[in-house]
Image (cartoon, rainbow, N blue to C red):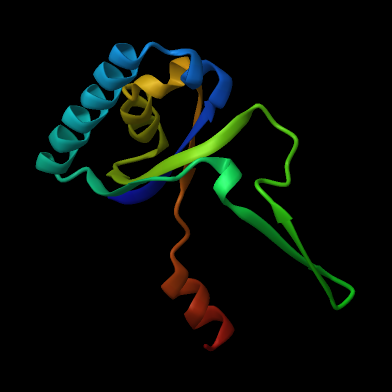
Length: 125
């Protein structure tokens, strides 16, 4: 099994426009789905992030540090959370990700997790 990070991006204006009952129903469905994936041994970790406006972006260029409120990227879809899953391959990971309801208010990115221990060995750290 390989690990994949499932990144949940939401258009905050679409999420904000949802009636409270619909938002709660969608979140409930997410929790039920997560519990099912955990029971199958597929979901290893999941976290929801606070609003993008609560974060900061840090960059260091030419020895100078800049800190900007919120996400730096100009985008409508903001990273809202992540799930660490295990799947046989990228196709299975995409099938799992497609079951998350937040694709209707943003997008879901699926990326393989790099074996950091292999990188560590390669660089002698």
